[in-house]
Each structure stands twice: as structure tokens, then as C-alpha cells.
Length: 117
Length: 117
Image (cartoon, rainbow over all chains, first blue to last red):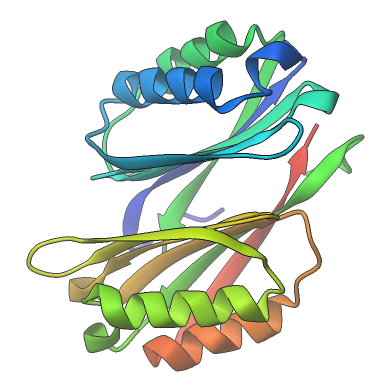
């Protein structure tokens, strides 16, 4: 993507692959990892909520002063899709490590998209 | 991006440019437009949350059965950053039209990123 005239932040789209399905089935462990990762991203947490799909699978959002983090998990595929939009400074490696540790993920890939126009 | 082996949905990153700043300053009008757009996207709304920044500016999330919609507004720049992650079918043109109408935006651009691995 070309350099933006006005950039308002970076959007990180993160694919967590070969996760331990037990870690991404239910709200409790997903929330724990998300909040820890949000802290590591230097975010100021405003609000969070997590939805439990039946029988398993979680959608979660953390609204931060700098924008948001989201997660959607597919335990049957050992996969979680995360996105982080932040207009603050963040060390993506530290945040990724937190997710990998929390979900026992073997692989993580990400794409960074600058937001603005 | 190469074709994915496993695709779990599409992530639309939408830039709303030259919005009417009055339409994106406060929660009420932003929520109205977001919920209308979510309906037009064929989403099943599970929960929504909107945060008012002082003096103006809004962050909002709509959690849907198919994933989520988010918005962050910068009224002083007449700009709103939206993302929609859906594993369902969605007509992006219809959804964009709803946002353009709701925010009196002169321009809208978007990027589509397939999610998965």
C-alpha cells in the first residue's frame, strides 16, 4: 500500500494457527489471554466483552482508548483470528508471544495495514 | 495475498473520508448508522457497545454471530475507520452506501483481506 497522507493508526490482522483447542473453546481462558495481551500492547482498556458460542468457540472484543482488539476462535480448526487496531505504539512481537503462550499456538502470522487516507 | 488453504471469512477495512463531522461526533448518530449497516450486511446482532470520547469522537463495536463490525471516528478530520469481519455473505456495496448516507461521506475506500491460513 502507498504511504498515506493521513495515517490514524495501524491495523494488525493476526492468524493464530495450530492452537491448543482446549485454550480457545471457552470464554474464561480466551479472556485471560486477551486481557494480558492488551496490557502488553500498552493499551488503556475501556471495556471488554466475550460471547460464548455453543458448544464451543468464542468471540471477544476489548475496546481500548487507542481503538480495539478482537478475537474469534474456531477450536475445531485449532484457529483463532485476532485483529488489533491501535493509534498508539505497540511491540507486535511481545503481543504475539503472549497470544502464542496463552493458546499454545505453533504458528502465528500477521499483516499490518495502515489506516487512513 | 495467495489463496488460503482454509478461509474463515473476509475482513473489510473501510475508510470513510470527508464525512460530515456532525454525524460522527456523538454516539447516537454513529450507533444508528452502525446498526442499520449491520442489518444491511445480513448480520445477526449479538451485542453492541459504543464509547463516547470527550469532547467528541466515538468507538463502537457490534458483535455479530458472523464475527464483528467496529468503528472509530475522528470528527476533527472528518474521518471514520470501519472494519467488518464476517464469515457470512455480505454485499459490500449496500453496506458502504448505508455508511455513506449515514455520515454524508464524500468518499469511501476499502480493502478486503481473506482471513485464515
